Amino acid sequence: MTIFLIHGAATWMMIGLIWFVQVVHYPMFARVGRAGFPAYEQIHQQRTTWVVLPAMTIELGTGLWLLIQPPEGMPGAWLLINAAGLAGIWGSTFLLQVPQHRRLGAGFDREAHLRLTRSNWIRTALWSGRGVLLLVLVLNAHA
Image (cartoon, rainbow, N blue to C red; front, side, top):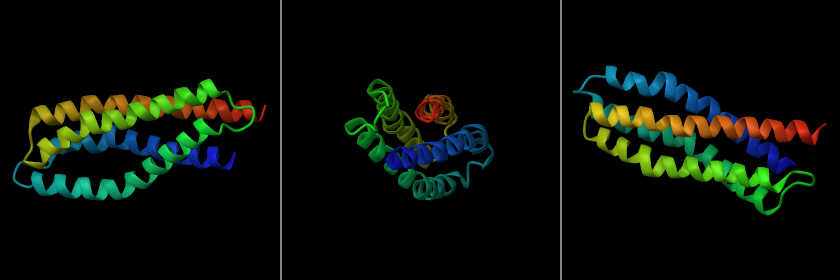
């Protein structure tokens, strides 16, 4: 159950972060200004990586561990859904958001900004849904 709790903690950290990024941070990109935007985007990517990478890596590792060695009484199908959500998050990150950040690294691009903000709803929804799933699993385990 310890791995499950670590997994849940990493997930809920990412839920808070993704909602902040989606609602506050990404929309403000359009207000940075064209002249300073490439440097801003570079710093954004560097600093965000330091916050996000450890939590996402812990979340991925513990999610796979739970899939391979589910805690007693925890439905394997639910853990498979959890893992599928993780795969969707990582896939969305590298296939949708990272390419838009690369475009933005060259300078503010309205279309890239819109694609980034819109496509990030995928991760926001997946993380949020996974968080609810994990809460249900915790509540069922202690019922």
